Structures are given as C-alpha cells and as structure tokens.
Image (cartoon, rainbow, N blue to C red; front, side, top):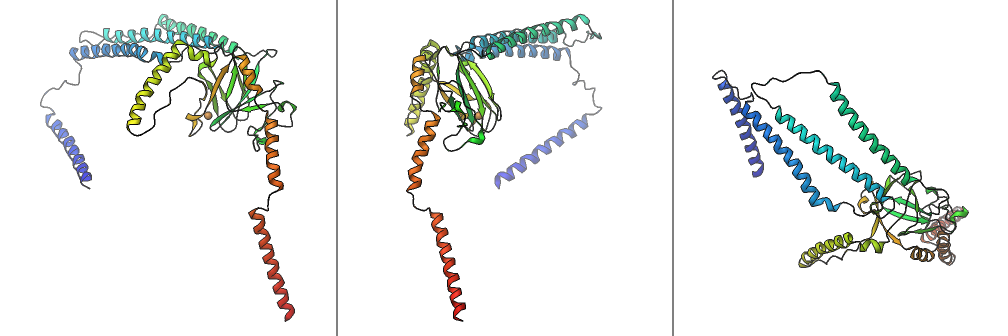
Length: 396
Ligand SMILES: [Cu+2]
C-alpha cells in the first residue's frame, strides 16, 4: 500500500513539474527573440564530428567483433562439397565487408563535408544519369555473378547420379526426435506411409513391400567416410529441418513429401577429433566445464562430465517446445567399421516378428482381463434379477 502511495505521489509530482515548465514557457513568449531552435555553425560542426565518431564506432566494433568472436564460426568442413559452400560464404562476406566499409565511409564523409554553414547554399539538381547508371550497373553485375556462382554450386551439390554407388538412408523427423532407416542389402528403401504406423513399426514402413524386408531402423546415425550418402527426409507432424552443420548440409523435412540431400563425409569422427582446431576447442570447453564443476561441487551439486566432440544432426526449424533438444548423434566410420556396425543390426522385419512372438504366449495363457470379468459379473446379476422376477410372477 505504501509503495502504491509513493508511486502515485511520484506521478503527480512529474505531472506538476511538466505543467510548471509549460507555464514557464508561456511567460517567455514575446520577451526576447529566441533562435535556440535554429542550428548554428557550431551545432553543425558538433553534429558532423559526432557522425564521424559513430563511423569510428562501427569500424572499431566490426574489427573487435571479428577478432573476439571470429573463431566461433564453423571451422574445417567435414564433407566434400563443404569447401564449395565455405568458398561461397567467404566471397559473400568479403563483398559485404568491402561494400559496407566504402558506403558507410562515403555516407559519413559527405554528410560531414556538406554540413550546414551560414554562407553555404544547397545545390539543387533533378537527376544525374551517370550516377544512376553507376549505382545500378555495379550492384547488378556483382549480384548476378554471385547468384550464378551460387546456382552452379547448388546444382553441383544437389546432383546425384542415378548410377552412382550411394548409401541410401531415410531420416524420419518427428516432435522431437530423429530416426534413421537404412535400405539394407538391396540398397532400396521400402515404401512407407504414416498411416501404417503400428506397434514398433514407428516409421509406418509398408511391410508388404519386398524392398522393406531388409530395412534397418536405428536411432544413432553411422555413415562411411569417402562414400556418398543419400538422405531421404520425411516428417511425421510439422516442418522440421535436417541440419548437419559440420557437413554444411541442411534440408527441410516436410509432412506429406520426401526431400533429399547427399554428401560425401571426408573425416571420420576420430580424425575430426584430432584436428588441431578441434583439440584446442575441446580443451577450452573442458577448462570452462572444470571451472563450473568446482562452483557446482561447492554448492553441493555434481561435477560436469568432460566433453568429447561428436558430429550432430540438429533440427533447424522451431518445431515446438522441445525443438532445442531434437538432435541425433552422427558417427562417421571407416568403410570397414561401418560395414561391421551395420551387419550387427537386426532388420525391422525381424524386430516386428520378435515383438509378435513375445506377445503371443502372453495372449494365449492370459486369464480374462478385468473388463471381461466385470462384464460377466454384470450379465450374471441381470440374469439372477430376471429369474427372481419371473419366479415372483409365477408364485402369484
Ligand atoms: Cu524439429
């Protein structure tokens, strides 16, 4: 209550002050010629130098940001086409930085050079064809080159030769997890439809399709180094986006359609962990974690586990409350390790059979369920009541 009163008093004081300044202004009308609203040469000089100050701030902050946070961007790409993507990105950055430095410099310099002065008069001219041509043609040519190079890169990345020997994998997105399906021996993924989801067949694989018989469903993604992996993406519910940052790959997963992306991994997980930049990065993360652990333990908590690097598949579309946690570990193996890992997996058909076999004896030897017993009891009670009523009527 007291605080409310204090707030009310403060508001009233502010209103009173505001009204007082208005009255004061009114008393000044006509007393002297006030030119405080007209900029003097001194004002214009100050404004001009402040603008230069702002320009210096932009330049210094940009350089500071690059030096301080520049190392946080993704480092060495782990896929063949990654170099192409990084190249395109770097060219774009260089262009943006150059244009930014030149245009901001010119803008502020012109404003300073032509700042207000009581002896100067602004020059008026309607247009200049030469200027219009310069600032239209240069950006058009630069952008056209950039877009053409981008299209060339995109076509190169997205092209999958039909006869090429690729590893076929389906990525299935749902709120909030990823599941992968390998095409098995025949390297052809069986048909699938969300309407066929039942029991452990959580991806809705059509088990009547011969191609589905050897499909393998897993929750951890293993891919072989040096071989093209062709991903086909599906989504069960909403828009998701399969994002492999280290491989410079991203593709939306759209309900009702299949999208695709293919890339060739160039470093196994073990090799990527050994790259000098990664060793340094992990050491830095673990140093921070160790410091945090000391703090946590002092407060009675548990220490943090040390971090080891792993490739990740992330979701890059805000798809719901637990979107942040929608990820899957990706392991790049040598081709031999990959073969061995895959050979140890059971097929979905085997899993379904095993689940059905486990269910059968349970169903055969089972006693009537609670609900059935209740129904039988009720029927018995009704029969008894009817019998008693019939007997009563007969006695009468
Ligand atoms: Cu998602």
